Image (cartoon, rainbow, N blue to C red; front, side, top):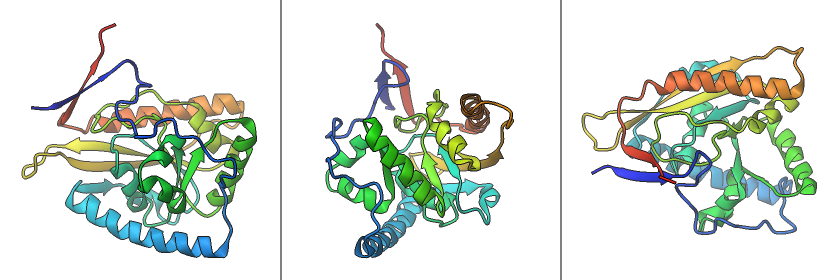
Length: 251
């Protein structure tokens, strides 16, 4: 019998962490240049990469298509549909051709037992509350974005194995517009497996996407969001299996 998730709207959290209302500490750092921290972060990331490879190959059965468009690219924004609780952390390094990515994440992720504390070390850039901390967050995006891809999930909430594309947060595209970076998409799709009960995952990479420079910043971000979403909707139609059922609650 298929698992069923019920939702109120597309902003619903169908999967919640054990500490959904996690509060950032006053001394939280978005940029840490301490040499020992940097070395430690690369050691942890190396271990993470090995675990990721095993997980996505043996458990998720992931294939990535058209990854060649990212060849020789190092600093860009990559937008991905949010459909894997763990896989969405593990898959991106293999989309980016092993270039270490940094992830824009919700602060609730830091409340995950054990793993939550490691996320900043692995490249999580937490969206903060308050204008003052937002300045620090933007500084971190620019600092790490000079040499690394930035991963964003514009749907904001994870819906496991969802095969369609939900509405985007257009504000997520303001970051790429303001930083004047190239934009790409990676669409996670699900294909029926002849061997396993769970479907195979095929990720399609597309881009870069451009908009008219004569537009205002807001118009650019809105237009970019539409262009990327349209491409992802097109790619999502490659899914041929529904492993989880989603039903809207009756009000």
